[in-house]
Amino acid sequence: MTQILPLPAAQPTDMYRAMSQATVGQYMSVHTHSIPPTETLRTARDLMQAHGIRHLPVIRGGKLVGLLSLSDLYVLESSLGLDPERSRVADALQDEVYAVPRETSLLEVARSMRDRRIGTAVIVEGEKVIGLFTATDAVRALAETLEAQA
Image 1 (cartoon, rainbow, N blue to C red):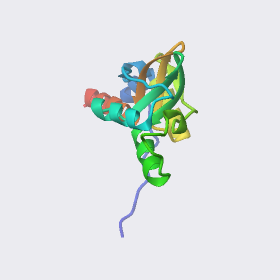
Image 2 (spheres, rainbow, N blue to C red):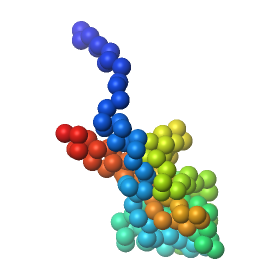
Image 3 (cartoon, helix red, strand yellow):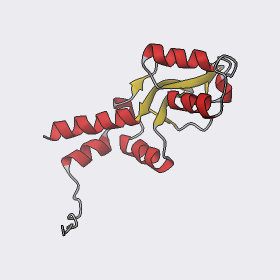
């Protein structure tokens, strides 16, 4: 039988310090696409597929009102039978969106995403959406930090 030994208590490292000083703005994906809540789900899916993206901020009157993900679209269309030609983005969006300024620490955002069990933070400047920070961006931040320490 293999014995599993506990790891020693973690000590602050250069990697930890680097990650705790980084901001989410350093690793966000720059926002270039959004959709109004009045568009159809088909339009939203086509836009995501055409641009190779998985999330769309939903904007009404210049303000963030929600977030739509490609995976949510697939679930809603297959499980609930929403017709993508007739159903609107407003019928499917997540209206509780985690939004933070670009200056927010990467550590704070990562902890909040973990605690909330969400995969995306919307990065804002005032009320304007300027980017997204996804789980993929978090993995990229971790990989770049680890590579720098190697």
